[in-house]
Image: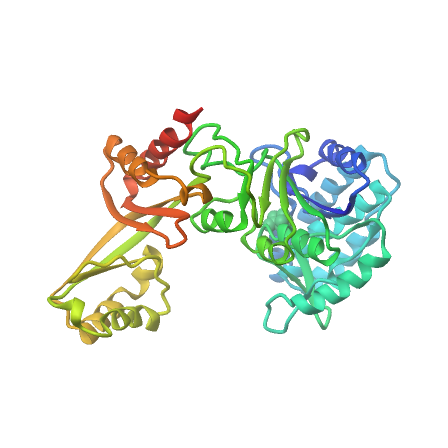
Length: 439
Ligand code: ASP
């Protein structure tokens, strides 16, 4: 049995958290490859080390004095080293970092030092081998991740190393320049390492006991999802639910490795399993509810639209020309509506509208802004009757006016469009019907 374990910033914010992580790792021999984040917030209002590093480098870049912030960062690590009572000095490492900051090594290099230094401490604390991610995680010249080269290098290396710490979040171009993933990218590293060593499971340790049915800022203490498929997760994540970095799904999904979201502060909780397929029945008829605000709809009306060949293509080409992706496109007989991101649309509004007028000669174009989309997602929906009816009844009961309905052809989601001001009420109403009333 081989496990890759990734720990987020809050799990490694101070020595006390490090000790919890240490006992989790030591509890199972299989936990052989460890991917740490940089130290996160120790208390609310605290600053993550990654943010301090960006700030510090911002000063270095404009030739301001950055010594104070660098010292603050050093003391964060020193505090951890002292608390763990290990023999380790990062003085030399900080000398190198100072020099590289002065030579303007780049913001990515700067940010990556957060996980790099945490990796050194973690390796020392556990007695594991430290592997610098810059040597293995490789990026192409265009800045995208080089899956083939990385997998080759990393799997060859991991075959030789029994237990190792590989810092998250960064890698390097072929010429050695450090490059990071986007924020939260240690999740991605964990997934890449899991694929490279062909792990049985990728454990992603964080500060919640799993993926929640809906946003805890809207519904207090929502239920935890026990098992979710990659497809369901993707739908929920796209609609705004967050626990994992979006790109973390792809490497393990390809390799069929399940992800287990776990809580460092409640290690006995089973957390959420993210799997390719499962016959495990979801606890509720739906798996999750997510949504986003900030959409605009553009409704286009034209007599006899239904018989005009190429009409839809011409409408969409106006958006394509402006580089705007569309979210949904429900249509009637002589009308069609395109849902787009409000911010993106606002920038190109007049250009798109005149293009639609020119290409399609519509009778009427109507705009509506401040819309929200709510997605109700679940693999169980396919076999269950009456799910849509319950969603709509819940919304009617809550006095929410529905602007659009879209059931994906996978029969795994129902998306409703509504006014942004109704968003929270809609989520709560749907949660009540499918979760609270079932408990
Ligand atoms: N430390 C990085 C961040 O704060 C990456 C990570 O934690 O995954 O975004």
